[in-house]
Amino acid sequence: MGQLGKSHLVEAGIWSLIVAIFFGYTFEFNQPIEIYKFGATGWPRVIILLLLVVTLGNLYHHFKNGSAIQKGRVGIAETDEAPTDYSNPATLAKIMAILFTPFLFAWLLKPVGMYSGAPFFIAAVIWLFGERRWRWIVGITLLIYAILLGLFVVTLNAPLPQGNVSPFYDVSGFILKMNTQLQQLW
Image (tube, rainbow, N blue to C red):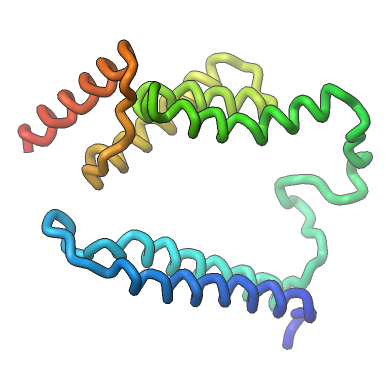
């Protein structure tokens, strides 16, 4: 079986089981939606299919290459760097900030909304992961935010949390008004 080990088969089996369970749950809410021809299960099933494709691709990669570290691969090998020292308070603070930021964003979604809060969340995550060049932070934030707006607002026409505190609600209203005007042009 190529260079597949028992751990590779167990990992693929676990991911396949997750795919099967999630796919089974999609039948719980399989209802038609009048504005979306694929129904309520369309996008969840696409994501589940992508998860299955990634699982099979990972299994094929391990079949061909095994678990050997590949030269020229992005990232670090186990021997390239000393292990992280978790006794350092700065390291622990950074880890806690990285873990806490999504919870803070989720908590602020109701008052601030997705439209106003997402750029700050994206920039904060980029900064917490170590990028310090402000031009890059702003540029990448704007790119990711534009992709999110394009996907959820323009393409899917999905309702996102607007926030209920001024001026955040006003920003959300402006974005939705611009989307409506853009949709009317087509």
